[in-house]
Amino acid sequence: MTGGLYLRPVGLLYGDTAVAAIADSKALSLGGSGVAFTQFDAFTGHRNDKSRTLLAAADLAKSDDPAITQLIERIVGPRAQFAGVSLDRPRLMGIVNVTPDSFSDGGKFASGKTAIRQSRLLAAEGADIIDIGGESTRPGAEDVSEEEEHNRVIHVIETLSGEGVPVSIDTRRANIMSAALEAGARIINDISALQFDPGSADVVAKAQCPVILMHVKGEPKTMQDNPQYEDVVADVFDHLLARVDAAVEAGIDRNRIVADPGIGFGKTFGQNLELLEYLSLFHMLGVPIMVGASRKGFIGAVTGVSDANERAAGSIGAALASVTQGVQILRVHDVAETRQAIDVWRRASGFGEKSVVGERV
Image (spheres, rainbow, N blue to C red):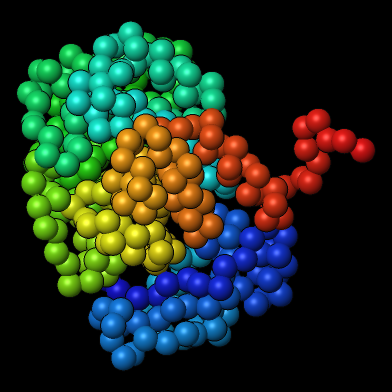
């Protein structure tokens, strides 16, 4: 538990500058992401409390308070591989919705054939993981039967996993989780954080597979009906901390857990933007962070672009806002475009070699 103390890493550094500052004990590492930070935006309770202050990260790291030490260890500790994928750089999860009513594509990949084709394309474009979902969880979506969800996704997963493509299954149902794992899926992605189906935590614990725990307020059908929080950042963090602890208690290895603040799931447009601004706080959970902001409604609210298919540029903006705060996994529709943007940002920020393909002398 945090004991009511929240430590948000700020004063962020990148690439060679980050490495040098850490070596000089002037900065700390942010979850092994290659990002470093020099200060904590510290507050107790919620963010409007008068206790809020800036603290030098290197100085606080010298604290002899065991609770402070534990919090900082969770923030700075390198993250384990995720389904065999190293998290030493931002990773992309490509979205394929095998549904007739997806908000982002209007059902373009509702058949198994088109879903497999799209999955192969996203993998070729640089997706590290393909996320297959057979139940629409867009705002206002109706539930589908377990049988229908099964019929939509299992053949797709069998085909892709047989080709060596790392696949995650986006589902809330324990039986679908089990069938997907048997079909070759490597990861469970549950928007309910293992709360929708009482049997889901047991499935994950027995399989010891990686799992993504997301925050959602309410059910998809009603989640956008005036969602309210005392403080959206602290409330979402507290919920995810409780779900991570519950998963560990259920026998799931902490090193196999990823947390997702649930952009667009039971939040207003303004609340989504607040969460994006404060993403670095979520490293306090001590697990990798995934963000799925791609093509979401708040991007349309900011840009005035009403067609979700035309929000690639705004989605890339959200992706860059995430990786600059050390987020390890991005769940996206536009893989090629996002990969280009991240590759350029990393080179321009001092990560890796400076040479480029086709460089003119």
